[in-house]
Length: 123
Image (cartoon, rainbow, N blue to C red; front, side, top):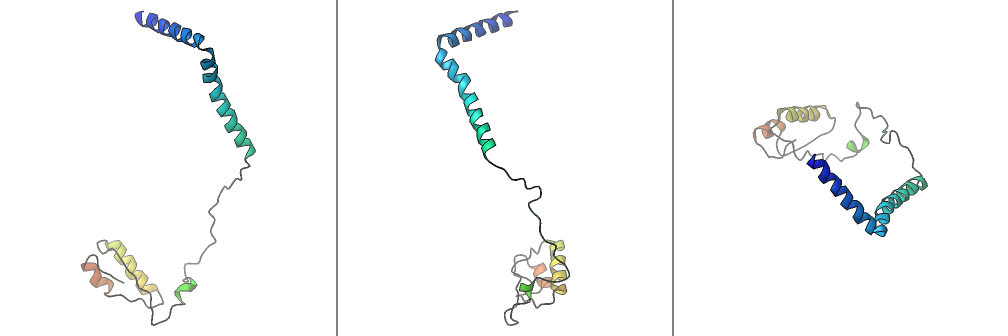
């Protein structure tokens, strides 16, 4: 019962303060309404375009390499700069790529040698 009396007195005090400062009360009520109205008006003025699926890429065949792979000169072959040697899955993928590509890839060491030495440049 005491809590309700305290709550009632607090509401009465707040009412008295609001009644004494009419201008501040009106501003406290009108400013949020004004900002909301501005946001709504801006939203209606800006024309939006719906892009349901904006990332549509053309299909690429996986049987052929892109053309830039074939335009390298034989004296300047492709070089794989880094393969994490602590992962056997990544190493096996890099070995499969090296075997499958119809172009020459060179490096300081082969994949098998680089697998035992972490942090080395490998192909």
